[in-house]
Image (cartoon, rainbow, N blue to C red):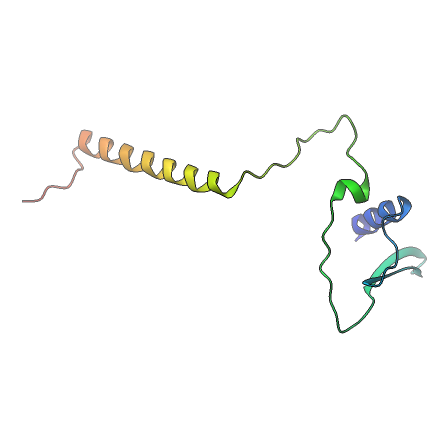
Length: 106
């Protein structure tokens, strides 16, 4: 929970975490700790948050040890699956014949 509080504090410091009609943001003291509490404004309605983390928390430092996450379009998954399956079937057939494991129908 400490990590969540750190990220909420960053967002609040940059001015991106504040009370709106969808959410209520309060800072409370619980067990001698300052805690940022985010609650829904209306108990009958639940909003699912959607945001760009670079906008909310600031961009990553210039020297960042990890590359950005990139998800290829869905078509690449299907093509990769078809190619890898085809290679597996072909290699299985070649190795099966060479090792004498092929099916013999008599």
